[in-house]
Image (tube, rainbow, N blue to C red):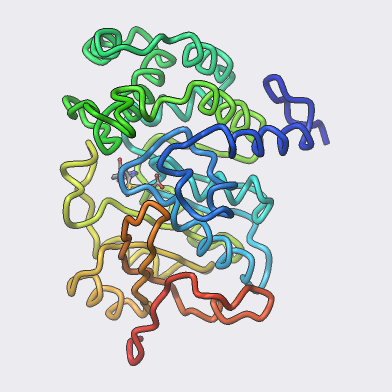
Length: 324
Ligand SMILES: C[S@@+](CC[C@H](N)C(=O)[O-])C[C@H]1O[C@@H](n2cnc3c(N)ncnc32)[C@H](O)[C@@H]1O
């Protein structure tokens, strides 16, 4: 098989060395997670509601499937951190991921459709200042590549990585570094190069996640990682946040392959999980920045957590005993 072409990369060895360097070079929010998750984090986004902290759990889920999954389906991709890790660690043959947001989609298309080098160069050459950032953010981009750049710039300079138009920009930032406190040109360019290298295994679709799920619903060895816009707060974070949650459960309960969902922990979501035959557990994790993450994870069952080949050390999941 023809080797995938990488920008400035000649093979997996170099790729690994790049990732190691990236680990020591960057100091962003994703770098505050556990070492393993940290090593695996490839997304150039610092996505609001992003799942860098969940990679450890998703890895265990994928490794402990009865048969190696051929495809990981991620219908609400955002920064697609789980898809990237799964492909990079060779836990699946490929990842199929979808995103409805036009700007986020422009970023994925640019990285995967031959314009990755342009984007990486643009990021490296951009001299960050409030004035220049504001200029880029207020202009309508003339093409997809520029839209992709604007999207990443907004994501990494807006407070909380919020991607909606008019999101407030970072003021003080980390250690008083201001607007540039989350803008790491070299790290971002290297991540983009890595994504470009992995592109034969990354199948991105701009559009509705429900359509993507339907495409794979009958595939025995397709597994679904589902991180939808949550019922609370999503309207502040994303341009697309209204989805029919019951419709999602109803659809996913027909999936032949396994399902892992993350949701906010509300009585409504628990009721939907029970109604459609899913089990759930509360997951609670503390990042090394002492940020507490508490969510519900929902799956067909949790047999995959008990496999002996996976480390039995706590991954933060709390068994809420008695629940389905
Ligand atoms: C919780 S975020 C996903 C974050 C992602 N797991 C990560 O780690 O970056 C949900 C995403 O779903 C997208 N979205 C909302 N409705 C959608 C739809 N119908 N189809 C596809 N994507 C959608 C939003 O734009 C948002 O990016």
